Amino acid sequence: MLERMPPIPKRTNDPERTKRDIIEVATQEFASEGYSGARVDAIAARTRTSKRMIYYYFGGKEQLYLAVLAEAYRSIRALEDQLDIERCDAREGLRRLIEATFDHDERNPSFIRLVSIENIHHGKHLKQNPQLRQLNASVITTLDKILQRGRTDGSFRDDVDAIDLHLAISSYCFFRVANRHTFGALFDRDLSEPKVLAKSRQQIVDMILAWLSAAPRRRPGESQDL
Image (tube, rainbow, N blue to C red; front, side, top):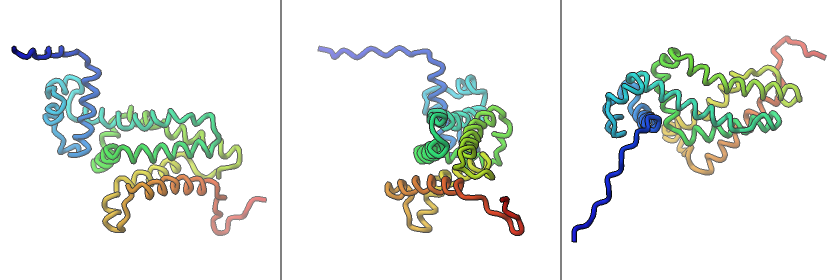
């Protein structure tokens, strides 16, 4: 008796899912090979689509790369929007945002590599795309509101702006992923080891909150207001 073969599934026409699949694979390709080394042919082969269809959806390699960058930044900005920071005090709100940034960077090494790659190209693709700059303005707005609440209740100093704060948080969280292998080779410390990871996560929160809680330092010759 012949064994009956299962029916061949029908091909569904789902452009949005196709585009999501392309972006997911393209993220891996660009993060692994860089902008110059990435190949649209390789992305097409891994998505079971065609180079022509990728061009149809995105317009070309550069536009696909920009779509990948946009999705990468959109994911962390969306994460920040979910933290319900408006309902808590300034210190708790900032703690939540720092921990979310730390966890996101730890879970998404492809994001770190993409940002590093764009820096190799001197940020030229970001400069050409005002939508990406507008997308990332939200984190500065969020931090500015946190700082304002902290200044109002007396818990934060008044000489740190939102961009300074974003730079400080991002620097620590980014460095420990981007430089993990070189740091480990030089100092024999595995930054991905669970105990080290937990310590680093608490450390960045403590550092930022201590910095914001400290009184501003006076410059030499500057009088103190009474």
